[in-house]
Length: 132
Image 1 (spheres, rainbow, N blue to C red):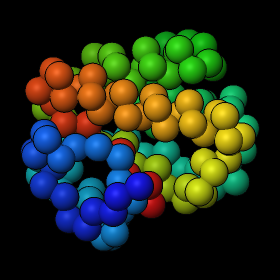
Image 2 (image 1 turned 90 degrees about the vertical axis):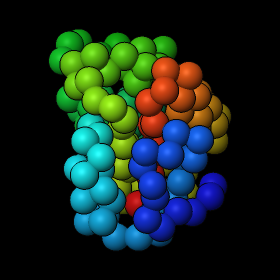
Image 3 (image 1 turned 120 degrees about the vertical axis):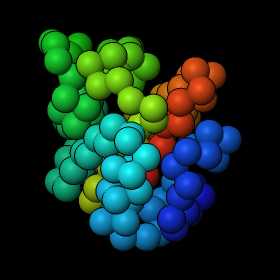
């Protein structure tokens, strides 16, 4: 995973998944200045697929019933119509190297994160995921 300090959030080509190497406060300020929707998920003590999925659904303020499966997460991250913005930032706080998941589930989650960035890039909207 790459590391980024003070990202230029409007840089569509650079958007991706990064370990945050600056203060969370700076990231919050940059997201606010860019007018981006910011979603914060606190992974402290979170373990297991169901719990991880529910934390992510809660962070995005998903307005409906969430299916608690990987397909539902894809649908959620590639919709966001309830929070339309010129770009998105998903901040994963207190995240461990395992994300609280088995190695297979962690790989699936990372693939979903990477695919989400590409999905939004194809729609000319930066989608950033930061691990802090």
